[in-house]
Amino acid sequence: MLEQAVIYTFVALVLIGGILAAFSRQILYVIIGLGISLLGLAGLFLNLGSPFVAAMQVLIYIGGITVAIVFAMMLSIAMSIRPPDPNPQKLGFAIACAVIFFGAVAHLIRGAQFQQIASPASEKAWSVGALGHALLTHYNVVFEALSLVLLLAIIGAILIARRALPKENS
Amino acid sequence: MTLESYLLVGAALFSLGLIGALSHRNLIALLIGIELMMNAASLNLMAFNRFVVTDPTTGQIFVLIIIGLAAAEVAIFLSIILRIYRAYHDIDAEKLTKLSG
Amino acid sequence: MKTDIVQLFENPYLALGVSIAIIMAYLSVNAIMLIWLERKLSARIQRRIGPQRGPFGLMQQIFDMGKLLSKELLTPEHANKLLYVIAPILVFAPVVALSSLFPITSTYIFHDFNIAIVLILAISGINVIGIFLAGWGSNNKYALLGAVRSVAQNISYEIPLILSVIPIVMITRTMSLYDITLAQETYPFILVQPIALIIFIISATAETNRAPFDIPEAESELVAGFHTEYSGMRFGLFFFAEYSNMIFACALATVLFLGGWRGPLLPDAVWFFIKVYALIVLMMWFRWTFPRLRFDQLMKFAWVVLVPLSLINLLITTLVLKIV
Image (cartoon, rainbow over all chains, first blue to last red; front, side, top):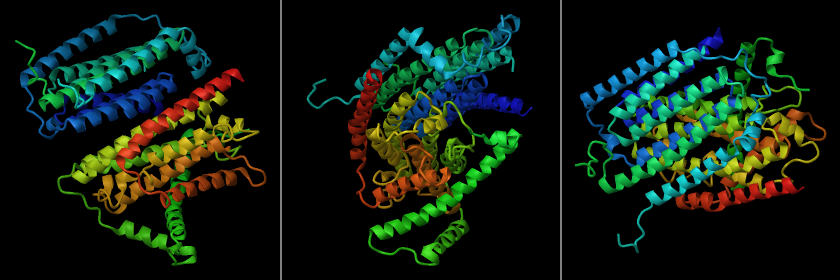
């Protein structure tokens, strides 16, 4: 019974964070909404059987990406001090799109019949060891490609944000 | 919770991210909307991983790759935002219209 | 053989309540004792005597606690009330949550996770957000500057911290703290990974904002950094969080590098605490020996010295493990 309450708490965190992030005018509240939503999502991942992915979500998203977004907000502070007035037509159009999308997907989910497996796989298949083994044997190429993408992203980010050297005439 | 409820939560999060991405003027809020949409997709994948898939490492690795790619994308997006701020001193999406027309 | 606290009290919710109570009690007493230790140690290092009221100056702590508790809780006028109040909780909560993972004795532990190290590194990343909210919510430019510097310092030193823990995981092939302590049967890992221990202690000192890396909260630099506007017990909570973080980092270092509860004659728990407090005395010794680093020196040290060093250490460990 308490487990159900905990699961619903995590779902509530996800949705409250999403609402904060979608409708706030102050940029710091949008970022806090993202943080709350990611925390709730980590709880849901834990409930879906994988504590490792939940820990990675907290480590990378909350510890890394949210902090980086906070830094970018600090460095581009002009717009965060005086938030602009919302444009009601834009907000109305966005809400209409979202409602149509949600309606379509909910209809699809209601009508679909998924081939669910009878019981979850063994304890060994869900362990971190199995994950590591799969990452280095079956999904080897994806792993290496991801590390290459991250390297390129770091180099690209440094190059784009670099201040022009005084010797260049641009 | 059943598979359908997880998928509905994922769809709700995706639509909230869509509202955020379409209606905000601040570029950082736009980025956050896109991040919420990616997270909704990973929630869907983890739900299918638990209820439908026989080998559970597939979904987990998929979600880890999505998290890694989101990190790379945020890095590039933020450095572009910094560059734009340095050039125009403003990150309002409605004012940055130099390429249009 | 180990006994979980959950196996001890059959009901898991009762076990949860008892473990929270034990940890909070221990951390409170510990913070008070560490403030006294710091004052006495700093006094002796500076060739003076330090607090003298009561035996060894211990009564001074009681008066200090009374002073902190009786101070008025001022809130600045235009501060963002919600963020201002939530920030100390966010800085303090991860430490309390994670303190139950340490194996203090060989037979009775709180709980044993098989991904303990990843959990520790992940949840201690939430401190950073708390520090930023404290700075922003205070509506004070000095607090904000201190908060931004502290966040930059924290995320820069997180990388050598994580990279110095990974060789240990590679050697023992497990991420559970209990199994890592068991694996140090013949020799503690300080003999195999001395550089990793040095990098870990330096990064931990920087992560907890202790000298010589205490630019964000230095008294002579930025008024008081991100906790400028906090008074009374809220300030006490930040202080409490800092000392709890210190003991957390030292406990992690003893479990990973010094062999946890192993030792010849005394019981397990006593050896664990002897090692933890020895490392804390080392961290306090740093504070009163080294001058404070300037902020750009601090960042340069992290990125130019520590990160390559920890990467080279990781590479050498991989090669040795593969070849030997």
